[in-house]
Amino acid sequence: MMKKITFLLLGLCFAAASVQAARIKDVAEVAGVRSNQLVGYGLVTGLPGTGEKTPFTEQSFRSMLERFGIQMPIGFKPKFKNVAAVIVTAELPAFSKPGQRVDVTVSSIGAAKSLRGGTLMQTFLQGLDGEVYAVAQGNLVVSGFSAEGLDGSKIVGNNPVVGMISSGATVEREVPSPFSRGDYITFNLLQSDFTTAQNMANAINDFLGPQMASPLDSTSVRVRAPRDLSQRVAFLSAVENVEFDTADSGAKIIVNSRTGTIVVGKHVKLKPAAVTHGGMTVAIKENLKVSQPNAFAGGDTVVVPNSDIQVTEGSGKMFNFQPGLTLDDLVRAVNEVGAAPSDLMAILQALKQAGAIEGQLIVI
Image 1 (cartoon, rainbow, N blue to C red):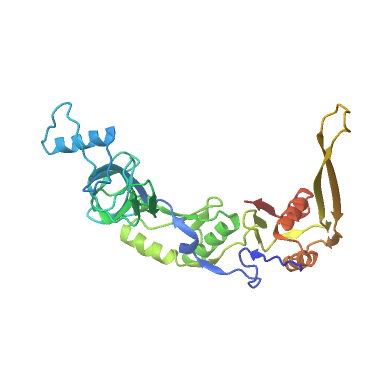
Image 2 (cartoon, rainbow, N blue to C red):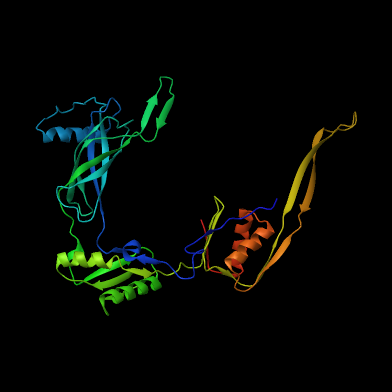
């Protein structure tokens, strides 16, 4: 039975000839308005015997007790299994103010078996500059579990050494933002394209007036904005809802060699070419024969291999690609050949090497 190849089409392949309008807020971000990553090192206590005993855990435990004025005897080795050393991470949203709370993720960095039932001790979360921007503390919620039998059998569900604390960190410091500085606001496109950047600048100028926006490159569009912060917020609220026509995506063919998925862009065309598709099967069968000498001949019995090779060549099919072949013609021609996804990948790669594809072939 002839196999059919299903294509996924990029962009607006089945849409009308005109492109769809998009809001600026859906395709671009304001420069400088971004989140910041925070990280800290801490201890989780109260574990039901699933903790760890490592040198850095013991050192951290001693330091924690010293903060409370408790001095452990020199040389004393505490025996605890209810403590674990962890790394705490968080994402600080843009414009976060002191007193607001953010979620944190807690991950074991030692030999702890599980963090279920533990409590994170006060942990300072630092930014890239080394300053403390939030403080985390609270009870962990761990979705994973583990169980181990006396015979060595073990079962693990999800990840028992990673937990989360909802609203577990309090923001202590505000991250400076360039949003309120300067005479301009810059929009950065999520997907760089010179045509899209120019179209965005034209739409903003039509909305605000001439010379209000200018594209800097294929990614950034600079817009003149009021200096007053309250006016700037209202200004940005109006500008980010302006609609404009985005550019079509480039001519690309993306081939996933693992799943057999082939994505063909709207503007992909083929130059004149001829392709033949056929199959050749080579079957090799080994027949082992025993060669035994006659009686009193003085020879040795040996095994002699006898290879039987058969080559079966299927009937090949050929079709022509005319200049400016459309996507529909390409799909129809390939289906008529009866190519499987793996065969089609080889055909596309051969056409690319021959320079017959007007577009970019990407194999992942």
